[in-house]
Image 1 (cartoon, rainbow, N blue to C red):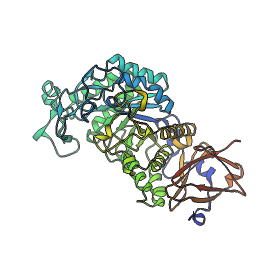
Image 2: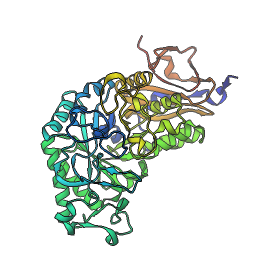
Image 3: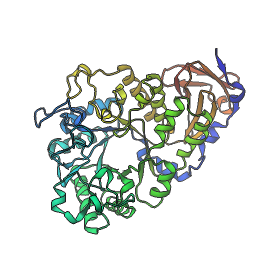
Image 4: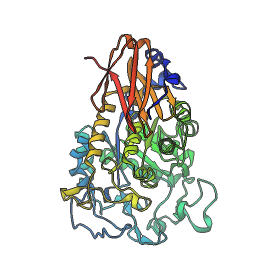
Length: 495
């Protein structure tokens, strides 16, 4: 049975007026700052060891073990820059580059090695299992040549288990009974905690990472475990990188569980960081798509709150990560619903972060299977050679990213909910006179809505950008008939 929601959705919406100014907490200077900020970037997050092997046989690998090295390296990632460029990626985020511990830990039930880079051994040396300094520099230079920025993961909170750092600087860490109970002095997962309350410790760690920026040319940090780093340390780092690399250098903090409000009040306003990861987007979007929440709550509660963050700050929002189960898994493997999630991610304010392989429906399971090899199909690229890609999903992502990049309103614009009844969500984004409408049907049957607005008098033809269909305004009305589990992105058609 076709469901009609016209009585609630036959709305008089001053779209052009709404899109010309701020709404729901967004101030004029947010828009001004956003014109050139990181919120316009499309970030691709990679664990290099699991992506592409460009120099086989440089170190021992065992791809049958989830916690061992699988052979990916910076050279392999450099070789695949054309793939990322073709996808539409504009910024690359890589896991830490510094020298990591040589041994393994077995608390996970299997030998777990530092293939991921988060268990530092020496902040002043590179992990040569991923390549040489020249190869890392070639990666960053190659990305820059294609107009891509590069973000490097940094760890200010801890070093690796049984790290040589403990012998070199025994008074610089706390472990065991020395560990505290608060966020700043606890030993996260039993890792030796850096005593950054000591000035010499903070200066050593911050200077070492800043020196790598100077030598390699990174454009920003993703600050690991920022929730567990003292505010004074974050403030000192922000001052350091701003002075050395300019105000555009990104400091994207991982504050576990944080949303836009938390980041704004506790980190952006005090100028501890200029960016943060929004942990709320993934869960709220998943729950709405699965029917666990009302559309009105998602449209008029959750989405507007994301616009109320501090002026000029950057929100990074993601669907899957190396620390959580893949969203496709949590959607029951439903690829149609996952496309809707990706569509919402790319039409929402902030900086979308793609976890490697999402664009080809990588089987991103729970940990450690969320760190599986990048699927490369029949291309012969290790470690994921022979693992099939979803070519339809890849084409969808390319199209979706191209639309976002061509439509600034989707990344920087104001937000206004239009229709939010039942399974149908329609909202408007606006930026400097540009208007975009986004319509999403999460349900199993077609949904209809009729919109009336004076703006349609001057824009009688609208283009649906994902499929290329045209919609005509008739008698000042624009009628949408969305197929089940579909998303439309509409902009005025100059034709």
